[in-house]
Length: 333
Ligand code: SIN
Image (cartoon, rainbow, N blue to C red; front, side):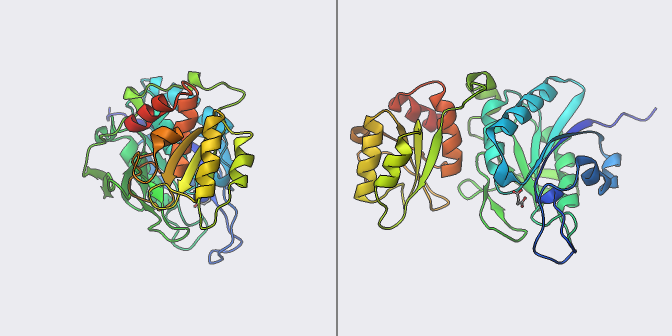
């Protein structure tokens, strides 16, 4: 008897990888059109490397990713991680919020089984669609022992990225992803992963967060304020009325106009947790560089981008409202 192929679960959530156009050269398309079985049928070579178990978790453009889908996805991934017959898990996903889902899972899934997220920049019907090759690489990575213990990984365009590091850096084109601070994790070559680095950040089995922390009905509300020249304070006052946390996507090292900082300080005084991050796309936001974070009651996001800082703050607020304790979590994750 030949050896059985490793079982890889493929959970589909939609995105351009499942998108359809009216014709193969048009720019317009609808994300989340094809089913998981359609995606798999486009890659018959998968039958040679894995025993695939397919599930449709959602079928949305990832601009419409919701906390409800995240919960369903995380619960399913957690169950599959506990299933000893499954070697690895692949999640097909739109590219717009793929990095957020990957980071969310890296904080909440307390297992070291390979979890690989994958998308495509070109719809499935496009000339030169790269989704089938990306999906093949994702399955090849998810079944590979070297992918274990690294937290969720993302494979796009033959590059492998860690969940905490990856960022969509371009709105179009195949080279739309990078890991600007620490660099990509590795590459896929001929269906084999070659890693360049270990993941030295805190994730999965070291994480103190779990799905149980998040109330089913309502997760702590955290909004992002995008800084710009002449930013006024009233928009922050408005947001602070309903938010439990605010992430500033600040200019430079997480800064904003005096009016905005005053409004954020008012929010912090009123019990809203304020995290300063940078809108620049890379680099570090440290405490007390241009602002006195201690006096203002602010938290510094270090090298987490605003959209990932929002996720960590949401989880942090489910365990503490103390700014120093939240800072300690940002120092760790
Ligand atoms: C989406 O995020 O669903 C649309 C864009 C994409 O997948 O590339």
